[in-house]
Length: 337
Image (cartoon, rainbow, N blue to C red; front, side):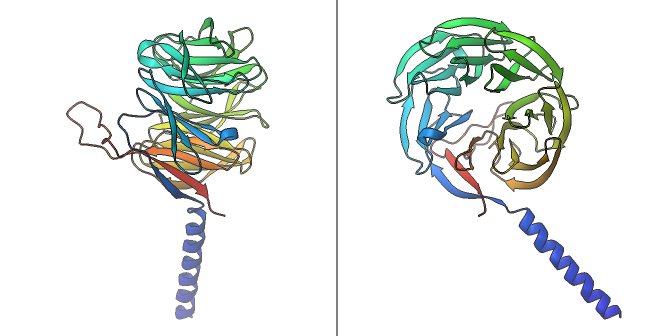
């Protein structure tokens, strides 16, 4: 009987190990695009209709083919590149130039700069709202959002936000949602009136930075530097649950086709969370990624995640490690079929 019991324990242990292995290997790195070049990076913004990626690279924005990894062109004349917004209706793209507090408008076909609009100090992330045909920047140090007409690139106004904004998302109905990292809040913005309507706390999620949105279930996902992801009901204006993620998050995405939420973290992990229902979630996988691959873009049409990576030189005392020139690359992560 002892031998049988031992055998059963071994079989059960093996079955558990196999099940765990299957559970933890749904998403894998399937391709690597070696792009090279110098400079740090920030937001990775997919352009699904054209199968392109817009990647902020310090003094420019790289435009890359999503399928082949080919460099299609670059938007230059940027001082401190952070975010990119695609306004297909007007044929324009917009890139934040954080160091001089401006926004560069460029042609979506030629990638040539066609205008420059003053924004505010530390112009960082930027999104396009199709319901108003406006672009909204989120200016960290200025605690504001700059509103720009996507048709002609003209400044409309600046919205005081009452805190330091990071990333934001549009609901497509004239409402925007933005994280305030210093206040640990989400603010709701009326895109037409260019005013803050309300705000709510993301506690116990502290320092929310990255954001994604689930339009069907009226949820926003805030990735927080405190190592959790907050799920908010944006109709009720409150957090409904939080989940553990890696440290140093800077990218969050949601794929409505799979019901998976993603958080890309500087600690070398990609946290995968599955949505069982609007208010029920569970961490299903932690994918190993390179250290500092904390930014991410998701193309919901091909369900691929695009994460930047590079090799880093040893950091001098009291300084950030710098990426080694020529080692910049994009990792393509896909779900196993």
